[in-house]
Image (cartoon, rainbow, N blue to C red):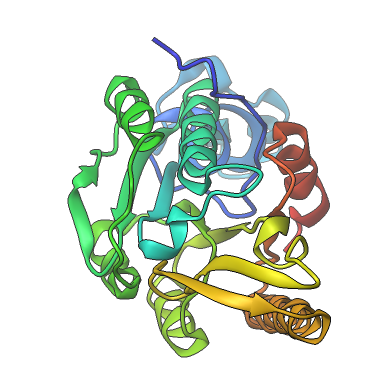
Length: 287
C-alpha cells in the first residue's frame, strides 16, 4: 500500500545506465530502444527485423547490415537518511516525519520510473535495522518510512555517514542524501569523496524555528546541532542575531562544499514540495 504521504516527482540522470533491465533512462546496452547506435553486420547482431537496406546496398563487401539501438534502462535509486540526534528537532515540522515523507516519495518516484530503490539509515554507524534491500518492489520501503515517521533518534552523532558507501552498490546510482547536515564539514567532505562514483542530491532539512523564530528577549530551549541534546539559553537581540549569522554562514559553507562536487543542495525549510524537486532536476540535469 502506497503511503498517503508519498508524493511522486520526476528525476533525470546525466549518465548512461549500465543496467540490463529496461527502464526510462539512457542506457549503454543495445536493445529495443529509439536512440540510434550504429550499424553492424548481421552476423554480429542476428536480428533480421533490423536489416538496413541502404547500408547493405552501399557495402562493397556485400555484408548484410542491421541497425543497432541503445535501449532505455533502469538505474539504482537510494534514500540515505541521517538518524542522528540533531534530527530530533521539532519546529514547524518534525524533521523525522519530513525525512520519512521525502524517502517515501523517492521510493514512489523510483517505482514509477521502473528503477530499484533502497533505503540506508545512519547515525553514529549505519543502522542495519533501518535498511531495505535494493528492489523493484516497494512494500518494505513503504513500511519502513511509516515507522520512520514516529522514530525518535538518540542523542548521538552522525559519523556513520562514513560507512554509507559500503552499503551502496558499485553500479552508479542516484543518491538522495537526506540530513540537516549538522556535522563537521571535514567529515561530510570525506563521505562525499567515498560516494563520488555516484550522483548525490543533498536534501537539507532546516527549520526556520531553529534560527529565525528565536526570542529577542527571554529564555528558549535549543538543540545542540551535533547531538540534538537540549540546552536552555537566555536570549537577547544580539544573541539572536549571532544565531542567524551562524546559520547564514553555515548555509554558505555547505553550498560551497557541495558545489565543489557539482551537486547543488536542495534546502527544505517550508515543507516538501514534489514539484520543486522535479524543477531541481530540470534546472540542474546538465550538471
